[in-house]
Length: 82
Image: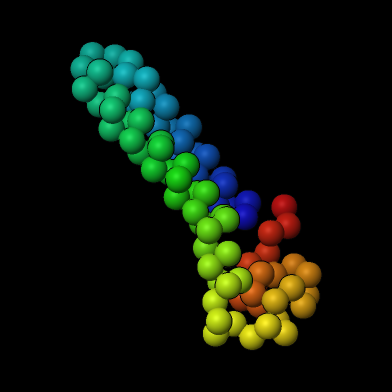
């Protein structure tokens, strides 16, 4: 979880100057910067919450493995400890 958040946050912080539209001609690139930031936020949310839920409800996942170790989701090794 931490590498996903750190990577997304670094990219979002890096896109802030573009989204603000500073400098000459910056107002042309500002919508692109805002769209990239919005996409990153959505993709990060989907990666951290939606994808594990899909694996959790996958009928091919053996039920004995779900939460058996307490640190993985659906027995696929997704560790959510920080």
